[in-house]
Length: 160
Image 1 (cartoon, helix red, strand yellow):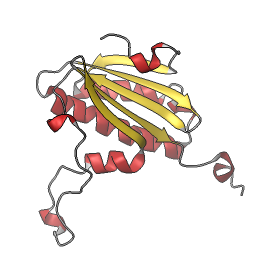
Image 2 (cartoon, one colour):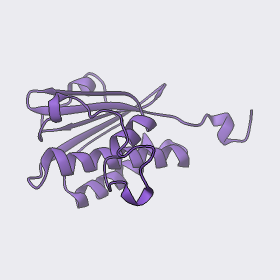
Image 3 (cartoon, helix red, strand yellow):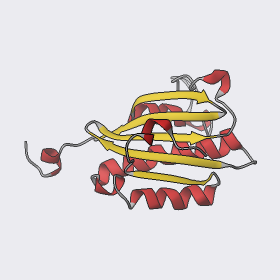
Image 4 (tube, rainbow, N blue to C red):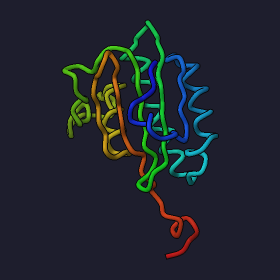
């Protein structure tokens, strides 16, 4: 995969390319969590980052590539607002060339046992990150988002 243009002019804190299959995603996610910039986050922020990245990467594996597999590139850059993430793959485009609508499956009157197994991922992603963008360019899907810091240093230390 060619270098990601958004980070080509500056050194990313972390840039990984790996195969989009469940085992590789798991290993790569563990690696990302153990290295800067994610390793420097609070336990709460690291947990949120893990949840969002796992959901995004599983979507790439299951929906963009399906059974075919392929490569996925992840760039993580620490910034003042949080960790800027860019996920690039060469799988199928999003339906309609845009992110799915932000709505939960079922309705307010749907019984718990009648809720579908899936369909909650994009709502979760939208709820936990900022500046979510999607585009397709030169046969590549490009998903960008910021993992904001949820807690300030003073609140982590018990200060005011």
